[in-house]
Amino acid sequence: MTDAEWQSRCDLAALYRICDFYGWTDTIETHLSGRILGEPNFFLINKYGDLFGEITASSLVKVDIEGDIRSNDGALNPAGLIIHGGVYKARPDINCVMHTHTRPGTGISVLRRGLRPISQDALWVYDELAYHEYGSLAAGAHEEGDALGRSCQKGESIILRNHGLLTVGATIQAALRRMYLLNRACEVEILARSLGEVPTPIRPEIIESYAKGMKARRALPEFGMADWRAALRQIQGRGANWRQ
Image 1 (cartoon, rainbow, N blue to C red):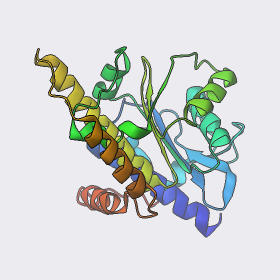
Image 2: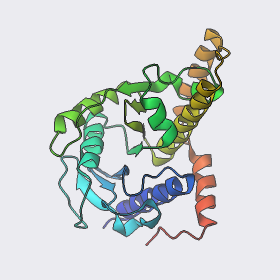
Image 3: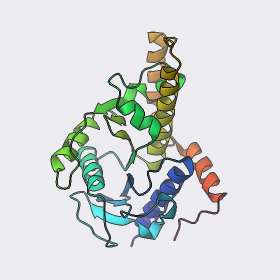
């Protein structure tokens, strides 16, 4: 194993532990993946059956973008291979894919109108938001993976209709920051819809200004790094040991 692969494993295992800390788990369902540094045709993903809080660097499975297992024999979620392989093939610039079934994200995913630009939280992701229509993720349904890849060419923060959320990033840190902001925006949207009042609109020029500012911020290589370091301190404070 190369040093680059081990670093990729440690970073992805930390991401799983962070998601566990944030409560973004669905017992043994959902999955996160990271492309291996220096090996663009391979990515790492969790074994099916492992809880997010149990995952370590060595427990992750190495898979090629066609879905063939290359290390750590174990059961894999077929839907995970379809989703992540499809995105990596369609987006060679992407090195991390996060998929969650959080209650706020899944709640917004079932609504026809979806996420509206009614809060500061939503403006952080609104300009790069895309939707993917619900399709079959049954084993062997690679056409759905291809369709998801095409949806991810339209944006980096994706609402999977009737399903959940998905974010991508050139780095693990960027994908995590997007997921935090997207999930937070969905939480606020649900709260606003429950109050029975028409939300206060944000002026179009403010929405446009936010989009320009966020586009510039996300283009920086350090996007998400400060939040990543803070999240690492949070899981380290719990005594988590993912580097094994």
